[in-house]
Structure formats: C-alpha cells, structure tokens
Amino acid sequence: MSVAPADTSPERVSLLASHRTAARFLKNPSGLISGVLLLIVIVLSVGAPLFTHLGPNTPDLSALLAPPSAAHPFGTSPLGMDLFSQVLYAGRISLAIGAISAIIAGVIGALLGLIAGYYGGVVDTVIMRLVDTALSVPLLLIILVLVVMLGSSLSVVIGLIGLSGWMYPARIVRSQTLLEKELPYVEAARAIGCGGLTIMWRHIFPNIIGSLIVNVTIFVGQAVLMESAMSFLGAGLEPPNVSLGYLLNQSQSYLSSAPWLSIFPGLFIFLIVVGTNMFGDALRDALNPEITG
Amino acid sequence: MGLLGYVIRRVGMSIPTLLLISILVFLLVHVMPGGPLAMYAHQPNITPAQLKVIAHQLGIDRPLPEQYVTWLGNMLSGHFGYSFTYGVRVVDLIGERMPPTLLLMGLSFVIAVVTSITIGTISAVYHHTWIDRLLSGLSYVGLGLPSFWLGLILIEIFGVHLGWLPISGMGSGSFTSVVAHLVMPVITLAVLFVAQEARYVRSSMVDVLGRRFIVTARAKGLTNGATVIRHGLRNGLIPVVTVLAMDAATLFGGAVITESIFSWPGIGRLFLGAVLQGDYPIMLALITLLSGLIVLANIAADVLYAVIDPRVHYA
Image 1 (cartoon, helix red, strand yellow):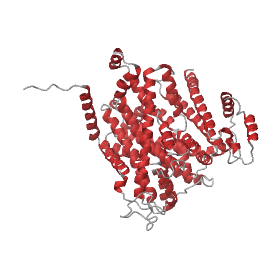
Image 2 (image 1 turned 180 degrees about the vertical axis):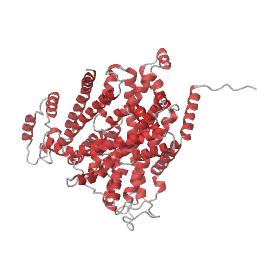
Image 3 (image 1 turned 90 degrees about the horizontal axis):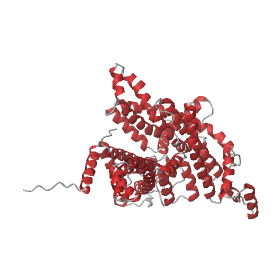
C-alpha cells in the first residue's frame, strides 16, 4: 500500500487557506446573516423580471396610490405603478452604481497604494499628500457641484462616486505593501530578476487583496447611500435611470397620505448598507483570525 | 517651547494640502460651463465685445498661473465675489447663514461624541455579552439608515402624527422655540456619526481594557468604574480623537441633507440652493471655506493628540 504524497503545491495551499477563511466566515453569525441578506437583495434586484410580471413603468389605473395589497405587495405610486417592481428595478440601478463605483475606487486606490508603498520616497510623499488633500475637502459638496456641471448621467454619477472613495483603499494597500515588501519572498523575487511591476502585481498584490476586498465591500454600501443622498437632494440620476434615492425623493409629498412610498425604498437601501457593512466586517474577522474585535 | 514648535510645524505641513485644495477649486471655476464669465454671459443684453471688455477687466485674458495667484489673494482676503441669484456679496450671505449651521453642527457633534463614547465604552466593558451584541447591532442600524430617510420618518411621527415638534425652520428666536426646532435636525445629523464613532471607541477600548495595566489597577483594589474611567478611557480615547476630528468633515455633507429636510436656514441649504441655481460664486466660496475648516480641525486634532498623550514627542 502506498500513501499518496501530501499535495503541497501553492495552489493547493491557497485553496486550503481560502476554505478555512470561508469556514470562519460562515461560523460567524453576522457573516452568515449578512451573506443571506445580501444574497436576497441581489437576487431580487438582478432577477427583477422573475419576481414581478409588472414593469416598473406600467400603470395600474384601477389602483392609484393604493396601499400594500396582494396584487401590489408594496402598494402603488400616484400614477399607479407597482412599487414592488419599481423598488426591485431601482435596486438594480443602485446596486450597479454601488458595485461599479466601488471597483473604480478600489482599482485607483490599489494602484496608488502599491506604487506609494513599494517605491516610497518622493513618490510616496506626493501620493499621500494627494490622499490628505482629498480627505480634507467636503466631498458630497464637490460631487454636487460637478454633477451640475457635467450633467447627471449614469456614467458621471458612477465616476464621481468612484473617484470619491479611493483614499481609504490607497492608505490600506500602502500600509500593507510597506509590511510585505520587507518579507523574504519579495527579496527572493528580486533576486531571480523580477521587475518592480511584476513584484507588485504578481507577488505583493495577491497577499494584500483581502483587506482591499473588505474595504471595497463596505464602500459598495456607502456608494449606494451617497447616490441616494444625491438623488434625494435633486442632483442625482433622473428617469429613465430610477434609483432608490429617486424613489425616496418622489415620496416626500406623500409622507402622510402614502407612507409606503418612503418606507419600502428606504428599507431596501437600509438592507443593502447594513448587509455590506456586516459582510465586510465579518470578512475582515475571517481573514485575520488573530484579531477578535 | 516643544508644543509651540510642534504647532508651527504642523501648520506648515498643512500648507501643501491647502495649496492643492485651492488649485482644485480654481480649476473647478475654469472647467465650469462658460468659465468665470458665465455670470455675465447669463445676462440678455450683453454683446461679445462687452464680454471681452469684462474679461479684460477681470483679468481673465491673462495667463492661468497669474490668474491663480490673483484669485488666491482674493480668497485669502475674503473677496468671494457676488452671488448670481441674490446679487449681494457672497461673504455677507455666508456670514448670515453660518451661525445656524455652527449651532446645529456644534450641538450635534457634542451630543454625538458624548453618546458614542458612552455606547462604545459600555460595549467594550461588556465585551462579548448580549449588551455588547445589542449595541453593536444598533450601530449597524445607525450606519444603514439613510439620514434623509430617518429625517422624513421623524417628521412623519413626531411632527405630523403626534404633533410634538416643529418640522421646519429655526423658530421664533426664543430659547425654547429654537431648542424645539433643533431636536429633530440634531438627531438626524448625529445618528450616523454616533454609529460610526461608537465602533471606533469600542474597538479602541476593547484593546486597552485587555492590557496589563488594567489588570494591575484592578489588582490594587480599584473599583471597576474607576478602572474603566481613569485608566481605560484616558488611554482608549487617544486614538479616537484623531478619528473624531477627521470625521467631523462628513458632518458638512450631512448638514446639506439635514438642513434641506428641515428647512434650517444655514450654509447647507444656501449651498444646495446655489447648486440647483448654478450660483458658482457661492458654491466655490463655501467649498474653499469648508476645506479650510476641515484642515484646521485636523491640525487641532493632532495638537490635541500631542497634548493628551504625554508619550508623544513633538517630532
């Protein structure tokens, strides 16, 4: 009888590590809860046509401003649109804005953080001063001004929110890079002739991506919140791109007569933001088992 | 000598940041549609020739770097220009709208700081018990509540249904009237801040309460309360100070939202009105001014940090 040699290839080891992380994540109640919460929100929004046969813009003229009922679980709008369907489709737009702008923020932050941390010196100083500056301006106010100047198209809104969020990822990636670059494996990579870009991308980045993902996950919720605030203030997306914030904006005049118009979109935003925050925190705990906060 | 030198160095360090901000804002003026001349191009009876003359008078035909220096000088001496919509000096408008905002923000900040330190400390003391879990759960709720939604719901419940509190404006000027008008805006502005900061306080206090000097203090026979307050808080709050000052900047964004919900006559509402009406001088003046305030708050935080933590050598 022969015993198969233990598989110690790097792929196998990292697979085991990520299995352990996943196991820790699921053992944490807030990880499990937020995972389920986010899954529900994402499935409902992305699969909107599966859950509602009514389009978000098809009016039911027999039910104008109707309270929640079997036919319209979230009630209807003043024009007779089914609010359940409106919320799901708006959730799609809000989630897309959150996800894409978080990726933009993460990519810019990761690039700048890697460069600052790896090269150090003047490059580091300049990048970190940029971070300080961006953190010292009233961001929501500047975004509002730029939306007015550039128009509130989907790409402008996503781009601006994305550009408002790169500072924290940059700081985190930089501080992690500073630690990683002193480790022997980086020295080894340099010894076999790897260039700076290869070392940063192939060697350092895979080791620090965990904290970046945590940060980007949490930013998804913040981006959804920011877009909602912009729409609410009248400087966000406009139809046909209806977001959850826009629905809330429209609900203001019906606060007493039709409270469901503000309750359900608000609840959906709430679930997205709470879900991403809890998910990010649980992910952080799962990635750093030694820190139990 | 040490502290003064530190303050001077810290102020010096923020000069590049301030310069970068001013360049950013200056470029904003120049990428806006119509550039700085937009105000004049709005008017119906103006000819291109007149526009040219005005451009010359304003110095807009000069090279950009030269214009920047002039503009910076104007900003530094408080010449923010005239509002398009109100036709009065921007500096007067801001002067009139600033006190209500400072009242709203200041009160919210103080209440939020006290509340978050209390909640965070209780969470840390009862670490891993149901009290901690309940408070942590509540802080997630606070994080996820869109502040404008919370504001609307407060208005609906306490303003419309129960009729306990006034829902808009600042009141008649008497003390009780102003206080009544402040309640809901302050809660709306403070909730998100409390939720964020309580988490920082909690994790910092959890860290400190696990240290050996806490065990020593208890071993000497100190009561639990005295240990937490005299030994725990004094150390645990040091890192929180910096975060508090940095996050105070987010209150300005919150003020825009809160003031617009409750029709509070402050700079947030002035700003939003300017945004919706394209009143650039007001927008740019406010952005410049608030950025300056945020930089000042950060300096203050660093200095405070050095003062309360005797281990910091002014380096």
